[in-house]
Each structure stands twice: as structure tokens, then as C-alpha cells.
Amino acid sequence: MATTSASPVLIRSDKLLLGGAAALCVLSGVAHYGSWTAVLAFVVSAAAVAVLASVVGLSVEQLGDRFGPGATGVLQSALGNLPELFICIFALKAGLVDVVRAALVGSILANLLLVLGLAFLVGGLRNGTQQLGSERARTIVVLMLLSVTAMAIPSIAHEVHSPAGAHEVPFSVIVSVVLLVLFGLSLPFSLRREPGGATDFEGEPPRWPVALAIGMLALAGVLAAFVSDWFVSALEPAMSSLNISQAFAGLVIVAIAGNAVENVVGVQLAARGQSEYAFSVILNSPLQIALVLAPVLVLVSQVFGLASLTLVFGPMLVVALVLSILLAALIAIDGESTWLEGATLIALYAVIATSFWWG
Image (cartoon, rainbow, N blue to C red; front, side, top):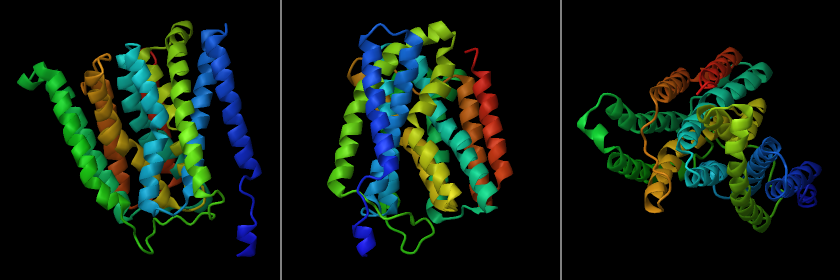
């Protein structure tokens, strides 16, 4: 007891992360308002976005189990997607609709293939075969499958030239409202505790007081808004300089930078042998992208007069999305994972990312 209460509020790794975040935010501002090259400004702002996402993850982690593991997981995913929300809003303001569409799909793919694959690979190599079969994890996979299917229907209607395909804006708005209602209905299950359940987090007790954790969350959110604006300002000229397509920039660069929380936290949990909790944390993010982020961006683009975003995605994006969620569902039904399955998921992500290099 005495040892726990005497533990420092900020340990060395906390100070390094917070100091690095502050330094990168300052550099991003200097790059934006100074005469830095577009590529260098883009790299610095992308690093700042990723580090700010990590600060969000650390802050939520320091809230510990005060709200229960379910609520903490939902909060972590929601706030972890905050930088990506800002990036997408500023990208829509700049007219980069293809970047936003690719970023939404890319975020789901990055979590389902890259981050989940890394968790399986690292966790499998360190701990052997991992068990995934909790009720919460299975429910998340089912919701993911349903929400991704709903997201894909406007695209299918457009491709087959159905009557609904001619009304993609109102159709997308209706689907977005339905998905948001589904998210609201799923909250009671996501937030309830599982006493003694396998998904309970068993990490170190939080070092930060609640006020500090919430304050850091608020500060990271404000800084993310500024840095995201600078990131998008440098994005288009950087794409031209590096000859990167909008599809690849959204699918890979924006998606990975905006999902740094899940990249770090999920792999760390798997490495500690907490595979079921890692599975739930990693899948909560793409679930919220499908149920919340994408619908909110559709509605925001219409209400505030930004470049119009609909849920009509290109055929390649839809196929990659559906195949990825089916693979995740198959792994969840099996109830366990191996390091080789993780390596396969990473390889598939590399193939899909490469296919969009040329646009």
C-alpha cells in the first residue's frame, strides 16, 4: 500500500512522451508558418499526430478501471480516433474527398490487418497460441461485420446502378443515421462490466490522479485540432512532391498516423499475454470508425457545407474491406490465434497497401 501511494506521478517514460509531444507540436507550428519544405512539414506534423494519439492512449490508461474495462475501452477508442476526425474534417474542407474515403477504409484495414497482425505475431512469439474467445470480443466482431456490410451497401447500389444508386447523398445520410442509432443501442453492452471476466485489464494501477488524466486528454484534443490542420495543409503539396496518390495517402499514411493508440496499446497487451483484452481494444477502434466516425463525417459534410462525403467507395476499397472483416470474423470464431496468422494478416495488409500505390 505504502509503496503504491509513494510511486511517482510522472515516470521517465511519461516525461519522454509528453516532452516529445510538446516538441513535435512546436516544430509542426514552426514548419507550418515558416518556410519549411512541404515534405518536411508533412513528416513532422504526421509524427506529431501519432505522438498526440499516444498521449491520449496513456491518459486513458491512467484513468485505469475507474469506469470499468468496457467503458475504458470505448473511451480509449473514441478519443484515440479524435486526431483522425480532425484530419478528415480539415481534408473535407480542403476538398480531399478521396483521401477521406481512403482514410476511413484504411483505418479499418490497418486495425483489422496490420495492428491485429502485429498483436498476434508479437503475442504468439512470446506467449504461444493466444485465446480470444470472450463474449465481448465475439460481439464486437459481429457488430463490425454488420456495420461494414451496411457501409458497403451504398457502394454496391452505385455499382449495380440500382434506383438507390442515383440518390447516393440522401441514401448515405439515412445509412449514417441508422449506424449511429446502432452505436447507441450497442453502448449498454459495451459499457457493462464483466465481473471476473477474461477481458478485465490487469495492468499496473494508475499513477495519475483523475484530474491530471482528464486535463491531459483535453490538452491533447486541443493540440490535435491545430496539428491536424497543419498536417492537411502539408498533405497535398507533399503528395505532389512524393508522387503519392490520394488513395495511398489516405489508406496508409493518414490511417496509420491516426491510429497510433491502437498500434501501441494493442500490441503491448498481446505481448503481456492479455490476448482477449488486446483483441477487444484493437477491434473497438474500427467498430467506432464504422458506427460513428464515418457517419458523423457524412453528416458534418452536408450540414456545414464541406466537400460532400458519401458512403460510396471504390470497388477495390469495398472488396478489401469486406475480405478483411471476414478474415477477422473467422479468426474470432476459431477462438484462438497463432503468430503465423499474425504474419499472414500483415502480409495481406502489405499487398493491399501496395495495390493502392498507383491510385
